[in-house]
Image (cartoon, rainbow, N blue to C red; front, side, top):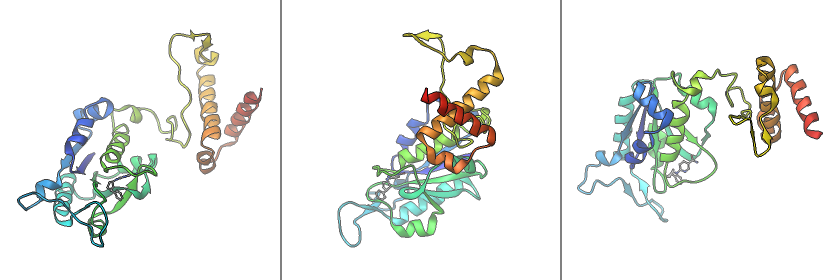
Length: 246
Ligand code: 58G
């Protein structure tokens, strides 16, 4: 998977990619991240990339020409079929399924804007989609780009999110994760749920699914509504509710 990020702060991108799963994906070659700085494509003495907004108002807007050159250089790094995505609060909410769908193509071009945004004509002519990581405004698209890269990296071959089967993983099948425990078996009088040390793997599997269903019902009923439940799952959830009442 190739990802090219167009950003005025390439160091911010590169320095965030040296840890954990993302680093391993880069080291193994499963992931390539290329940074393209629009400033390198500015043609004037001062390497200008921004200008005042037409119509007036505060702040600056990223100019078309250096951004367009940078985007085209970035697209060339990714190759044919790489979707060009603008990160902005007006975009489509980024969700797990979008990270998964990214694996189907050769890669992505991510445009991280700064200032008040980018000239809309560039969005119209050089961008395929807009994605948002949530309903808040950030000072730049770099953190959203890193969020997208991280979510994709852990799905690549040889990483954790890939090793976990889709039906086991949180969100992979539209449910929240179950609770996790490790040693010691008792701490501050709090014991690990007995089923987890029973050695009964079928019972453990049922308990985990029940916890996932119960937590999703409690915290994200919207997710459960969208996903639906099998008959067996309904029984598990009813049992969760009954136990919670006691
Ligand atoms: C208004 C303000 C329009 C992504 C800023 C455009 C990017 C939030 C997200 C911008 C972002 C998100 C310039 C700074 C986009 C540009 C960027 N803020 N929620 N800010 O994913």
